[in-house]
Structure formats: structure tokens, C-alpha cells
Amino acid sequence: MNDALAAVWYAFAEGRLHFRTRAALEAHQERLARGHLRWVVAHSPAVAARFQSAGLSPQQWRTLPPTAKADMMANFDQLNTAGLHLSDVLALARHAEDGRDFSGQLRGAAASAFAGQAVTVGLSSGTSGTQGAFLVGVQERQRWAGVMLRRLLPPPVWASVMRPQRLAFLLRAEGGLYRSVQSRRLSFSFLDLLRPVPDLAAALTAANPTLLVGPPSVLRALLNAGASARPARVVCVAEVLEEADRAALEAGFGPVVQVYQATEGLLALPCRYGTLHLNEAHVHFDLEALGEGRWRPIITDLRRRVQPMIRHRLDDILQLDDVPCACGSAARRVARIEGRQDDALVFAGGGGQPVTVWPDFLRAALNRVPGLREYRLEQSAPDTLWLLLDPDALPTRTAAAAEVTAALARAGADTERIDLRFGPLLPAPPGAKRRRVVRRAFSELPVLKVNSEVKS
Image 1: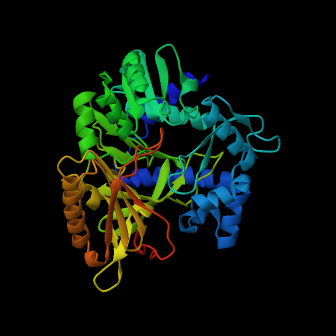
Image 2: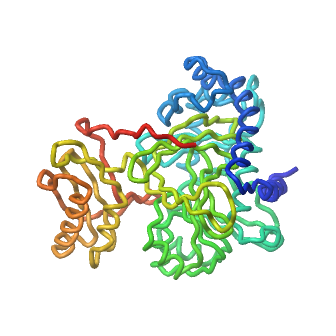
């Protein structure tokens, strides 16, 4: 079966994975986990070593101490089951990024579980401080594309796949995950974010996509540059989607939905009503409480085998919505992807204790500043916060300082001990992710404490 047919098959198969009760969903996850964990432990020395070190069997995977991206990269050669070396993966991925040709693949080593099979490689953007490499096998790539088609094409999916669909991806790196499933009815355009905005706007207009995928800041910039398109859906990826961006994109392009994906996998997708749900038919989520209704995910991907993700802790901050969705799915609803935990700011409180200030509070505060087009907040020291503004004018500075100071005070920070500094917001490099709230590394910063509460 070729890639295009396989992706369509997975798209229809995804329709059978609609669980209306948590009990049915969790039973499905447990069935997947039993076979998957046995296979992974048998083929990934790094995962086997984690279980052995913890004194646990694969059946006890739910209590395995979590790992993180830095650990994954440090043990990359022993983690992946295709026998690939990190040096080779990085060399190919960086060559692809430099030459803007993402068609290259590696082949699984002769003695590996994927001997001779094609493996797609890529890099994360590295905005979290640790650049991640990802590996995806042929079947994984087909399933990934099929699941995306099922969730993103306008319902009913059988009608959508019978009509010509033009998908336009505005991405830093194409990664090869979708182009291989191109067919007579399904065409993909990769619009390179390194191109100048006017060129991208013209290319988007010419592509006239039925489905448009990209970071919200880029999509809005293209809209402002005169891009014209009326896709059935606009899919926002890679950045926090703010309400002002959603409203502008819906007015200019069409209905907006969101996808939550990362180096670590395909993590949340919209249902037919546009509500974002955790991808729990394929990924198990444990959620660590961060306080104030915020959670940090620990994921176990129950499908990926080339690069296993077993009890892998992400740095993202999620807010969930407990109200049942009209679609009837038991998969949990994501109310908001707030960003990364390392972008939460930490200042001293009135008694000297560390106080966490979540990015959402600061974004909401600056959204009230009249005339502010764009901004970035950077905490560069325990007592220093930079406000980089566009426009960087006295009225904007005055209003921004008042709003930020009030937000910090509401969060419990001692504003008398915080030095607010100002500067102009410089243009971001082409292809860079937008980060509006940033905490720079400095040794004096208290470590954010995680509540002991964890829910599966």
C-alpha cells in the first residue's frame, strides 16, 4: 500500500477510536500499552535500562520515573530502535535546514528492528533551550498523516477526501511528514518561513488552499501583507494562540482550530466542533499539578516505536476544561495551551518567598494597552523585567508599566523590588517562533515547585 492510500486508511480507521466513556478509553490505552511496552523494552536499551534501574516491570510503566528532553538527547543512540546515531541524525537534519531540502531520509541499521527501512528525521526549533531531534518510521508517518487528515479536513471526512484538497503549510521545516501522502486529490504546498513576508503572502494567495496550517503570528503577518484565501479551516500550530489573533484570522481567512504537536508527538487535535482534545486514543497523559488550574503533561506515546516516548515529561503548561464536549468524546478538553513552564516568571513576594507569575496574566494585561502592536517581556534577573515594545513610545511605556505592575501585584509579587526596563522590540529572525513572555536563565532563580497531585 502506498503512502497516500495508507494515510487515507488510517484516516478512516481513526473514526473507530471515538470513546464516549473514560472507562472505555482507559481500557483501550491499557490494551495498547501491554503490547507496546513489551516491544519497546525488548528493542530500546535506554528504556530497558530505565525500568531496570527503577526495579519495575513493563506492566508497572505508570510508576516509572519520568524523563525529559535533555535525557532523551543524551541517550538518543540507545533510545531509538532503528540503530541510528545522533551525530548522523543531526548532520542530515541540519543539512536539510541549511539547503531547505527536507526530502532526505536515513535507513535503519542492519541489526535494528527497522533494518533498511526509511526513517524521517527532523529538528525542533530549540526555543526551550534544548534542541530536540525526532525520528519517524514509515508506518508512523502514515498514521500521523491519516490522523491529521481525519481531524483537520471538514467533516464528513469521506466527502472531503473525495474532493480535491489543497493543503498549505507555513512551517520553518517541512519535515517530510505529509508530502509523501500527496495524491491526485490531495496536494501539499510547503511555504518556507524563511521567505520574505510579501513573497509568502503572494504564494499563499496563489496556492488558494482549502486547509491552511501555520503559526498564528505568521498567518496574521501574511493577512496584514495582503494575502487572500478562504480555506475551510485555518489550523494554528507551534505558538500560543491568543484570542486577538484568533479573531483576526477568522475575520480574514475563515474558521480557526488549533493543533498541539511537538518533537514528542501529536498531542491534541480538534474534534468536528473545533474543540481541542488530548490525543488520548494514541497517547497516555499523566498531568502534574502546577497550581491555579495549570498542569504539566507526562506522556507515553502508545504507538511510536522508532523513537519511544515512555513517561516523558514536557515543559508545557496546559489548562483543561471539565465541561463535556458536544462531540461526545471522553478525551479531555484543552481549554488553553499557555506556553512552557520555563516561561513562567518568578519574582520575590512580600515576604521574600518566590511567587510564580503565569504568562497568561501578563498577556492579558498588555492586551489592554492602547496602540500596542507587539511586545515581548523578558525576565533577565530575579528582580529585572524588560518590556520590549512596538511602538516604544512614552505613552505606550507608561500604559504598559501600569498594566504589568498591576498584574504582578495581583499575582503576589513585591513590585517595589522589581526593576522595569524598556526597549524597542526588534524584528524576530525569519522562521523564529513568537515568544511574548520569556524567562532567561540565571542561577539565582528559585526552582518552580510542582504540586504532588498527579492525575491520569
